[in-house]
Image (cartoon, rainbow, N blue to C red):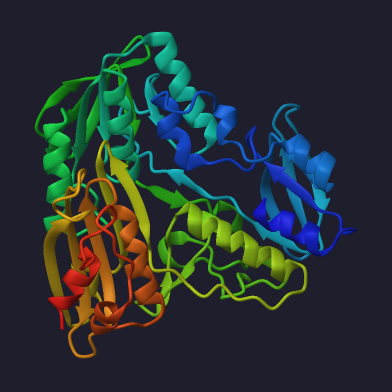
Length: 433
């Protein structure tokens, strides 16, 4: 929708048709755990703009409950299913943008289709979880997967006074971070009441009368009245099947920096499409709302005849679990080793404010630089209030090609209520120079 809105601003008279298989447009999927927890009082608060607003105020023909099922590249038309009427029709196009997003991974385990088992992706899935909790008042929740969704939902369900158990087949939570930093998160989660089991592989679900009753791993069985799958997501690129549209990293649609696909006149943006990684210097796939919105802006400008390129991503992400803030950017040690890049690391513990100022709390910063050049390659932060947004300094440094010494030299702000005189990011940088 960000692409469609940009095209409308640039070309007021152009015909724009949008097909959406769900019921909602232009919403914050990232807000779903907070809606489920009751911190957001109404799902409508997560909607930036409803379909009728696009139609009436922007003259964008948005058709919800319509799923595009096929692309005819040769004749420049798409086949569309009207879900409510169970009918299909063909729609022609001059230019086509594919922005189909990503879907939760749902492996073919016994019982996975049972009532009480949910994956989170669209706003409707969040509403479904909320309504299920309202109706059934579950007291025992199991989360499968310790990534962003898993951690955020663990907090939400604890807030609803549920017993929360989280399983992950990996040896750590937060696989995008290094284990030494992830261990800080795991420790705090356990202290907060989460039953955390790592290195355990999901086996199957026990079901009674069509509803989940327990989750079984290769090591134990855990009772469950609600299950949330946080096993990662995959790009929705099925529309490319049977067409010359090429796919790339992890099955995402291959695009250039203008977000053009391999077929002229067809573009792709958001979680279904690749991005260029600024550190790896190669194509990657990162499903984040920040990236998707910027993709939409670039695609909209180019669909309007503009020359804009998407510069690339660092993989910057942020979340929290209760009072613990978590963020990361660039490459982790594991990723650097896979890319055969020589690096140095520094891990420091500091305070979020001057130690004597009320509210000062712990922050741990990990900074990674290239061994030879000193160029910043990645960073991770785990700490309490005032910690995580400091990752933006590191993301800026990576984007600008700065070295650890450049970070030390930055004229950052200081006052006791906000930071020690040496900001923790600079303290980490000092260890690398």
